[in-house]
Length: 465
Image 1 (tube, rainbow, N blue to C red):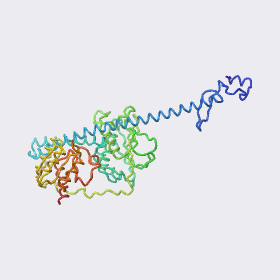
Image 2 (image 1 turned 120 degrees about the horizontal axis):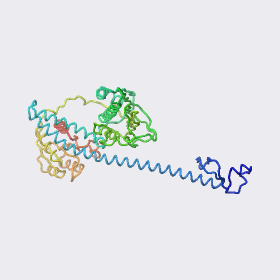
Image 3 (image 1 turned 60 degrees about the horizontal axis):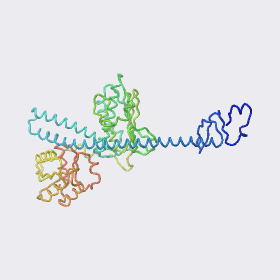
Image 4 (image 1 turned 180 degrees about the vertical axis):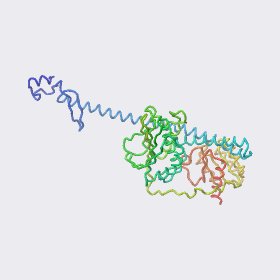
């Protein structure tokens, strides 16, 4: 072992030292190993120097591998949490929709039996109003869980948002100024217009509340659209990577200069029922997350407490062959409202309260009704029924028999009889994998008496003219 200071003092050449000699008090050195430079903070030479450099490189690579593994595990935990919370939210919403079906259906039926200007009529109207508000909450839960109704079409996001401007101006805080920066000629995205409107409204409402709580006389909300490239390593909260890196995306961006989001709250803002506000249910951003996931998109959030927030939704563009949506049916009159029905409708549902309210609705519309509590019971009922059966109303989620098996049996026993499916979940989620020629229509719970009769007349007209 030789001291570098003493070697320099006596003018000794280090090249003449014995092989493997160690020199102390030598300054740190950059060493190249496998085309990488490692900073070695030890004055050593020869094989010892190379060994320490290799050890430093090994430690560096190991730390990188551990960091990558930790990030992967964190992402997996995030996805598992989202999946479990989504299953729970979807199950609650589905069961709650069955309960609301009974509340809204019976309230609507009862209101037609009392004088329109009576106290009872006003009370029933209030029940229906609150029931519809509860149904809106279940739709947000379904949106978070990924079970929401999804009716996609090619959309221009700038045009969609432009039509919402008057509504958003009225909805935001008086302290907030809304500035639109909508890019023209965007590539179309394949999306559900109603759900994407909900995304925009929820994000703008969230920004408005942030501006309101900012403590300043006024603030600004910027709502913009455009095209961007999804960069590798983009910060997303939570960590979602539905889109591959370096893909061109169409985005919606909402920026505010409000209170911002505390760092401790940022990982939780998309959890259902989490809210930092005194009022609110904590479902707005949860619904946004569910809708974006359902559209195969990504959410990016950047915020610092006291410095506002930026939410960006990135969505994949639609296929080039898709065309502008049409609106041929918009504004068309409803021919089913005052029509009387005839013949028998078979209602198959495992919920007694749903069977009861459907029976009352259909009787009032002029139909005869037969009910069954399960798929096998419904099939047996169809076998024994006289030839007057005009349609079947079939619940999608029941014990004892799958809906696919029930549809196959109905087609065999009663060919030509249209089947209307119903569920507390959305159509896309519940009818995936079913042959479209096995059912004629779908109606999501909770539905109104008018909604059920309208859908039933539609499928009967298509089947029998």
